[in-house]
Image (cartoon, rainbow over all chains, first blue to last red; front, top):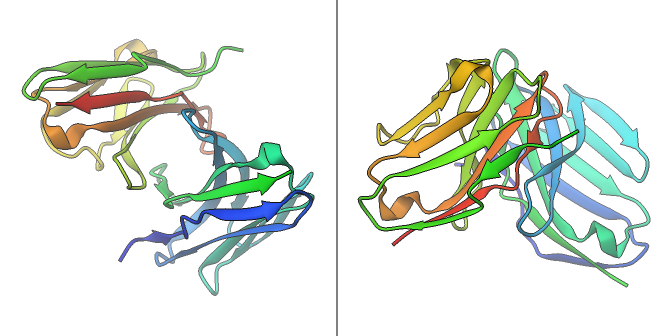
Length: 111
Length: 112
């Protein structure tokens, strides 16, 4: 079983829709949770990060962590064609910097 | 501010040859990481440097892979001898702390 599970999609939505991206994980020791965005032929770009449980909002993006369910989410409001990319969840434990990535979800936002 | 730079962007080598990948991190970033993504798989951690010291090399696949970080600045990842299964995209990232790791554009390695 993978430590981090993420549906690879693709996920296709119309412009302006609310997008929900999710990951589940099995290792209860994960405390740091991150979301990266990756455009084709580019390196991942850090979007959001949270520590332990809770919500964090930044502009059109909201990250949620539910440690009791081992489930994290990224919501994108008012999605734009420029949001079309692969979104990767990532997480790590306290005491180390080793980051475990999900497979990434390919998102297409249609104009 | 210059980002993380990786050289070369692409490399095609024959099985059994040696390849050296280079990473120039963002200036002042003590933490440097190497990751790899092979076809259809997740991005996998290879190792983590703090300055010139290897902090965690638990992800290195085998002893054909050797990473160094000279003087706590740039880093190299050498694969010797290369095997077909080493093909993939190798990413380098750097950070000041555990948040905000900046990734390079990656080196696409193809072993034929």
